[in-house]
Image (tube, rainbow, N blue to C red):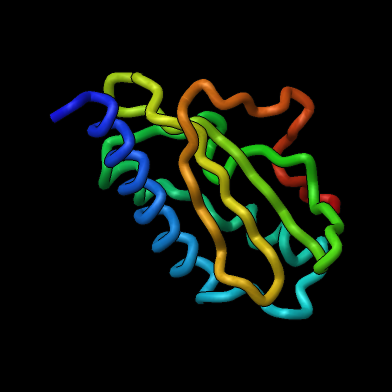
Length: 128
């Protein structure tokens, strides 16, 4: 198989596995009336140790990663998180982006490993 296609297939698989994981952890859609604090609490409870073990991966920083914080958009609130996914040999698979938006299903995508994560992003705050 073409190595580029193999890597893309692995990213798609990881995206699907993490989407399933997040759906199970939060019980489906986020609550429509979720505020900023609610989204941060959800994010802090998304650890993916089971996914790491099952698929021989690691995440740096720990899944779901770092964020700029809850953002206000024209349609409401959004929390975007990012972390790097590495295979069992430490080779980069990609950058995992997880998006939580009230009343929507969570979205997880895996971008190429060269995708930057802003240095100023931090772990979801426990005090927010």
